[in-house]
Length: 335
Ligand code: SAM
Ligand code: SF4
Image (cartoon, rainbow, N blue to C red):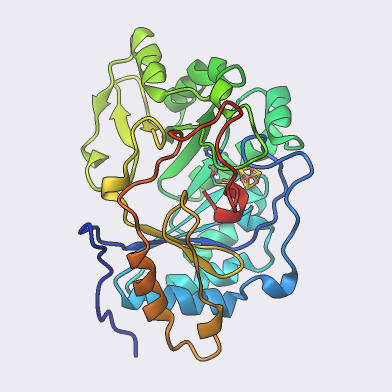
């Protein structure tokens, strides 16, 4: 019998009701800000949590008041049978928000099955609208496939469809206008995201980092009046704006220049079964010892609360070469 029995609140008073689940470390792209050209050494199949094991962790979280689940990766759509996991999570009564972050390369062919399985909304990563630059940033991707995925997500009623754009100086900053134009044409929630120093592969992070305040001013200088949306309170880290010319909205996520740790409400589950209390810090707790009978999973989540720190210090302790080397890069955490 399923029942919500408690809540997860850390010592800073932050309630945790959001679990981000990385279902695989594998990916069909090699984005320059996420991994090196050779990719990441893949985990052994036996190290990866099965869908039943992921479901057990999600259920334990749900009993502790988790309401939102996001499936991510690596690339979640490369894991076989992902729609079965979506279906099972969607059946948990207290999970009222089920979403996915994807690069969109396989979305057009899978969106109907995902929607039918109960996926409600999707974030699609897209850093440029130029086919050649897309290939350069992703090292192997096909822009048209991601655009088809976006169109399919809109057509099949995933709502909202959010577009994640990681902006990098000297790489895709010239694309800002093209993205704003896209939101004039389609009801998308565009989100510009600051490039984060989370992996050792890009020692040039500092040179490419672009604070988003500059971007906001550029958009305003083009004549767009940006009015804050009501959503701004309580709906995650983005600062969101609407404008009379836009069908959708424009958001700014400033994890580096303006951390939003005071409203942190999330845990991450890695593909190999670790709860990460924070994207940045290295502490993590394995759920594996508790999977054989499911007992103790709630205690692991509660224990993870004790590891929550007040804030991250991303970008603050940089040497000349870039950020200190992290144990896990983005593709291993899930964003
Ligand atoms: N493969 C999926 C995708 O790309 O959407 C999901 C996993 S990906 C790690 C999740 C998100 O993290 C993506 O939106 C990606 O752009 C973002 N990301 C990866 N590395 C990043 C970095 N160094 N700084 C900012 N965002 C990053
Ligand atoms: Fe793959 Fe997503 Fe990382 Fe790009 S950002 S390499 S699509 S996991």
